[in-house]
Image 1 (cartoon, rainbow, N blue to C red):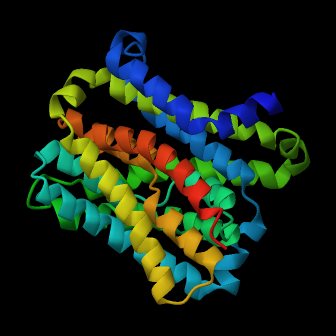
Image 2 (spheres, helix red, strand yellow; image 1 turned 60 degrees about the vertical axis):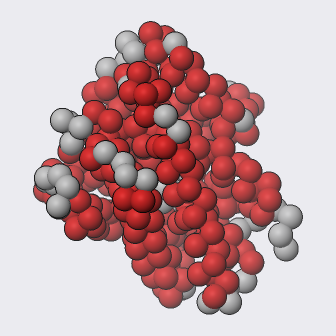
Length: 307
């Protein structure tokens, strides 16, 4: 099982890309999965994240609060503003604009910690930022989404708050508690968790893509361009801010990856639950899930050479 899990972790980008192509061009292969399952798939991924977290993961918050605060502010300003700017620049329709902005207002993704590790970056800082940003998300994500979209669509802040608590905070907290009380038992299976997380992410992506295959193909290259630019500019801005603040190279890598990689699974789930009348709102999150795993793998290979 450990070898299988290692395979899933190593070839995550290729696996997600292959399954996405299958769901896009042969939607009947995956359309049988109900869209209502997306939330549960994400909860499983978040629970796995909680199982890997220990109290010392939060030490960085108290020992290096400046670094974490800078990361949090950058996360919740750069990505939302980039999403809004790109959406307006490319003239996205309301549903796609909602989806792109939700990607931008969500916290960093769980994959960011893995990519930071593979990049030779500051892993404790990455984990600390992910943890703090995730805890802030129930309040910050609905608030920023409302500010950016209030003139375009109706935003139910309370519904979004409750959704984030349900699919992110509660599963992570349960995983953390289980790990605390049954740590020795969990440690025996910790190497299998990446496989479960990858499977969960794949199920989210293929569900969204298969149910929206025709719409995705009809949108052309615009939404793909917006998603790719959003992700790449996030990497660049994160690295640029770290360089401006004269951070060491390990911190530059961590900040770059953490800002550029979003919790697109959460964005997809929120789009489905908070904007049920905008079917295409789930598409940007699904495309981002595919793309950021590809770009993250490529970025890690590049960053490993930077000393």
